[in-house]
Image 1 (cartoon, rainbow, N blue to C red):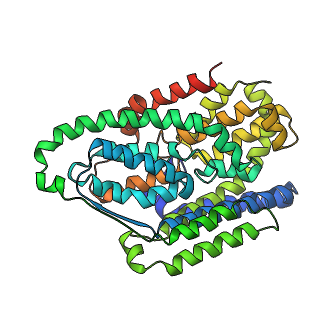
Image 2 (image 1 turned 135 degrees about the vertical axis):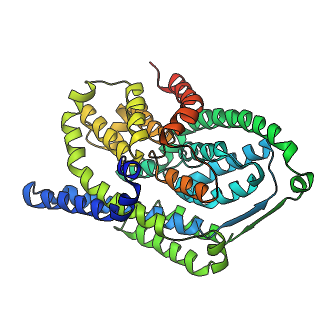
Image 3 (image 1 turned 180 degrees about the horizontal axis):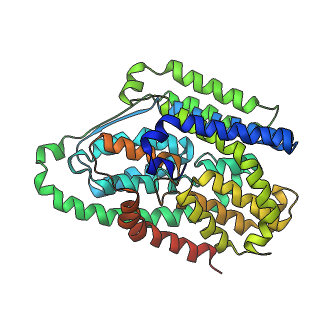
Length: 400
């Protein structure tokens, strides 16, 4: 997943489904026949169904909301847009919010659109903004499925959310102000004055509310998933084709995520058990929150942050020997928070860190934006702009 899309993108695009499902099937056969571990495999399948159902439903509902904007936004208006987007990410998920807002964002800045607009959109709306609720980012929803209470995320993450997003918005304002001052002489006053903004598909807010309510359903098994699917179906059939067409909505991104995560969830079963067994050898008997923050973050940046989150959460279970999630949160709350923030925040560090990143890059390039390569993304944006924020978050919450 990390290397093939870079080394051989065309080959990967043709064969990723066969590779992901093939490796998942091979691991499942080993679990059942050699390791005789149908229980762990069954738990993984159940978690995958819950995960992909919620992600898919949010994707469908967000695809039924269309923002129409035109004109040229000032840096202050851009900051307001990004701030609203970070809040929406906690309701629609980072993938859903990114897919709803990326095209309006580009339209809003169409007369002076550059790579920094897209990269900061990835930083904020597709990643850092989504840490207030388990719905916000895939790693946090996996934690919710593991037993972390819904309210625990909001209570513990909001100060970190406030600092991380606040710093990034301040940095973006400075960068965008410089660019705006340079570009303004070439932008006609007529274009600046013709602002047009319209939102359609607001009936999907009702289906969004149904999905959010369904998250809290615990029993009977798969009742939550069934309710979520009904809400998604209601959104799909009541949204006009014109809105889907305006959003250029199609199911390919969801299918790709579903296929890749099917392989991930199955192949992670023996890996998680190995981490549980070897955790003390890897990180010592009592690792600090900072170790988890940087370790989870570093791997989330070069791999996908969802399996990285699960891996380090399982490692913490192995170190603490806690019998359940309630005991783990009582014993190691700072470490759990460090894993959560590390996975979400560092997911913005590269195109590979979180699912929406590559989708946003592709949409921007189709619109004619010259996006940085993988290494240029690191050199021109992650190191000078994101890394200082990550260090400040570490100093404020996980140092010592």
